[in-house]
Length: 508
Image (cartoon, rainbow, N blue to C red):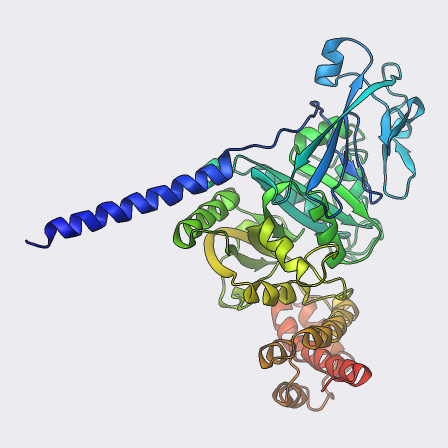
């Protein structure tokens, strides 16, 4: 009993300390909002790679490595109501100039102007002039407090991307995780499947049930394009930019020439304004409490550490169920031992930028552009983050369902090429971090070479010799068994690519 006052004092101190940290977190995320001059608009901005954010109301120039962001608001001629609400038709702004002829158009990265007149006829209303441009500098070193930015690179994945974006629009109770608002930066990596047109509302809108109602074509493709997706059922040409903006109000589309996911993520970060960055892939469909779960986990980590060293890692459940990916149950094979991977992660923007500076002072972003092919760019960033003292905070309720088509023999050439790229990039990874840990990850060991040599009978079991059996299994809907048989073959190609690239680069 004598120790009771001491215990009570200890509990009071502990509670006071915990409450102070929580208050610091809330202050960190909900106050000191950046003041940006902007006008309301129903159109999402399109960002072009020349460095300007383009839409009918505003123009923004990225900071390009500095801690300042110039934001321009365009004031139109006409009534105050038109200027304040941006309901009138406005001319596009490219750089610092505007043209009334660019009315009803948006600028894509290569400088070409795309209009919707061919789909919906001439626009209603007259053309207008830009009468004034006002600029204000905004401090964005670590991002805007309370704002989260979700960065998603995509390449020819329109059907599943639609589900991905819809799931992000359905987020609930994210304020309970300390998130005031969020934005979704979709970086199109030179897609040829109509992704940009869709995001800008220029493509004929799919049926209300578009992402769930189609049946696969015989070849598993849409209009002859690559990708094993169910066909979308198109109802008509009635959806344009304003309607698409209402469907995806958080989305800010960005376009670049096809250069891979590494550059796409770096490019997207240039236009992300949030203090916290979330990375997911464009084939991930998240739960409605996804953001709340990440936010609550980060807030808890902040209370534990007193700083933002921790990043949250959500669960990823693999599925081939396109119609209802969130119905998939978690499996043992869904577990990942990666320290940092961009499939489902939330991290402080400041930590990311610090990790980027470890590459070079004037680096383009935190992801190393040396990884121009498939694989390892996110895990390599993870090694740098680990050296900086970053740690994982699990967010098991931040669940994402990673969709991929069921295995088919026709996928083999693409899968083999992907594994070869993974092997070559793996050697580059090892060059940067020559440790046993990296060797094991990229399978650059005699054990892995022997393992896949034995399981493929020295290469005798390969994609050609097994093709008849694989097709039989596919015809009987035994795709999972076929995929299991193919796994040693794919790993064999990975190990061979590692050996060849090691000899080429003279890496021991």
